[in-house]
Length: 337
Image (cartoon, rainbow, N blue to C red; front, side, top):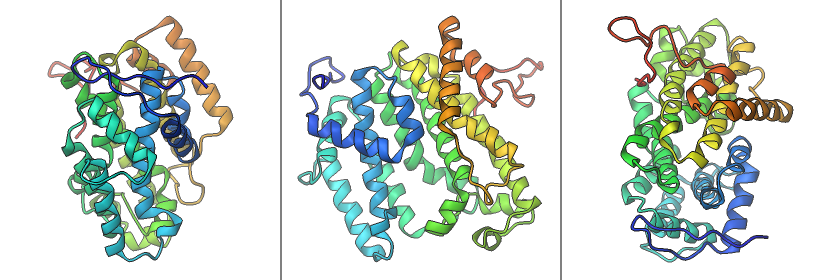
């Protein structure tokens, strides 16, 4: 195995390298639990790839406190206590009990990741302990500030773009796009395993569906229409996120673009199933994943514009008819609502 990467902090001084045990445990967790993103992570430069393993594993450890098989039936108070301890370790207020948390603290310090991003993430995990429904888009986005936008902010930090403030809104939008796709893909799993529904209740109501129907796994035209609406809303986040990939370092652009292509392809599957996400959960086969990689890579060889490559390979068009300027001209960047 090659030696661990050496990282630099925002002032350009060198920080201690990650240890092999930290990297291996983090990589194993990501490989086991995040197949789609793990595939894209392979193509990141080593200086970012190993730290991405650490971030993903850190996020997963928190998620497992709430949703792991062993957590089923555990009292909410115990889960909250475990999350409080996890937060304290992540922020350096207590000694780390896992190599992943130890590694996360090093990454956080090296890239000046603010405490507020860690707090926002942990707050979202705490919400998952007892909150199972979201009234509207606004309430869901408040949750996603920690569960998705904070993740995008941390990923932006470790990539170290020249203009972090310019890159950040796009990175957080892409993080939200990925999570919204996960919500649509995992409707059945979230209901069966966690009694959780992330489709806003107001969206369901607009189409004559109530949460009890979804909890009973009753589909139909109304739920399909709600899924269609959420799919369209999610694609606005993809447009805004992909439009900012160009702000990232050159050696990070293709892997992030590939991740966007892979996640967005779940939308193709959902449409092919007539928006029925209950009977057969949408999946990407290994063959499809490799095909998308090859098509994206081939396009990238001849066209280094993330927007045009995504538009050519993905089912999500970058120029939606509703995204136009005051004179009817297409907008390159669509800000999600």
